[in-house]
Length: 231
Ligand SMILES: O=C[C@H](O)[C@H](O)[C@H](O)COP(=O)(O)O
Image (tube, rainbow, N blue to C red; front, side, top):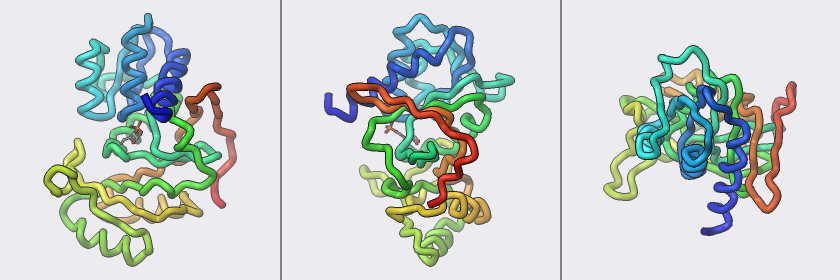
């Protein structure tokens, strides 16, 4: 196992201590969450899961972790998810696995959000990871032009198998914006939220409460209130 995977697994295992039996737990998506699901299945915690993608639902079925639809619960106690990048304010970029829409819906309906990451994902400023933006297929070519005009270096995400556009679980496309640095994530989020055809963007701002970073020593960072993360 390489260092990144080892750290993902360490962070995933460390997250188990925030889970108690009978909790409603939001279950994110990705390779780090896969390690968390394995650890959860092996633990003595008996939870009810709310998933964020078909792939996570399928893994829960294999591991016999019970899940319900998000609309069947009146609250979600805590959500455990991965992230593609996290800054010092615990703002982050998500959606590398195209699950950002459901991940954000589950996160916004959770009392607490905990991210599990390897330490290569922690940066002072966001932007090293291309920012995923989920869009309606109709008119997506126009959005690509607008994003390019705004200097966001957009690229439609395509399958490496057949070069066709990736389709999300909700039937949308993903445009990845290769900006390298995002100086004001709040202004950028507002821009995307004002564009017709944009369903959701991968900037998760003021959402994460705690990040668990894998490593020889597990690091746990908690979000400080009233810190905006604008450089
Ligand atoms: O769409 C996918 C999610 O936002 C993932 O949580 C994110 O891409 C991190 O994935 P991984 O744990 O595989 O690095």
